[in-house]
Image: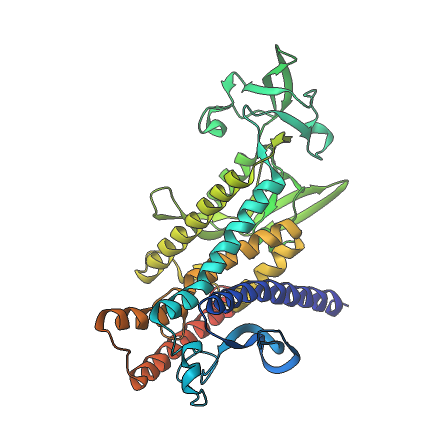
Length: 437
């Protein structure tokens, strides 16, 4: 009887992975295509996927657009290319058409065309981050009570929509590290401004033991916990604050925890084994912490304000920069053995994460596509032959020496690059399935 739900979950994961990957690949390849066209280079084929063609059609520019059976990538084949990687010429191009080929185009045109793929991935990431901020809005300053979250009766309060949060337990809300300053108590006094008058109103601990998000491929995700679940006890010790969860998980040091969860009127009992995770710090280094894979939040929803397009794009660009610098720092620490290689995910891990994020809702799934697009753009800029970064290295060599590298040298480097990519892919698959499941 377990086969049907298992198959359903598997199919859902595959569909989510294919959708996410197809969007990212389509944007990446469209970058190559459109910038190449702007630069006077003719695209013969734009393919989403590899293998047998399922559908195809030509546009007015003479480009064949097609969907192929294996949705694991895509390519743009330019006029005269010997293959989809734009390595070598097929020898069929007439002399007067040489300028319209990838190999015959000026160096600046080839450089712009190749760089456009990763650039469009970065643009997609910025658009997703900016769009998410515009959709969600930004908490107004000062923090203002919106509405109570869907919580058990013990979390009730007389706070009202529009109350301006001034202090909790006498400590200003704008204080740094507020969770460590506020006394640990199930009920606290909140100082608020209501209609211009200051008053004190009782309420629950401001960061309750409520799950606001579940991290994919975590202990909580494996246990099928979800946003809105309320953790009421760990190892038979009652909890009401999220910081109590953090402290007990830290103290367990990876030992399994018996967790009692309230989901509406239903009580769930699950066992969660905290997992070691390497997390980036403010100084760029990584620290190892034990986590069960949940995030928390305020017991109420804050009132939000609309964020304009300009501010949203600025925030999106900052989000992209943070994503790229954190990823590069993680790779450096992995290479030097300072953090675990379990921080590397391959196709299996990405597929599982795609399914988990899609299960959390459209907003989470779209945000994941933005993150993944940023990662794909970054990886494609690595100076490895076969990748866009490898082509850009060849073009840099040409710019400095005023001559192209020989076809034989390019082919050798391409074989080496392909071997490196395949080796890394095999390693990450083994990582996902065996070493770090």
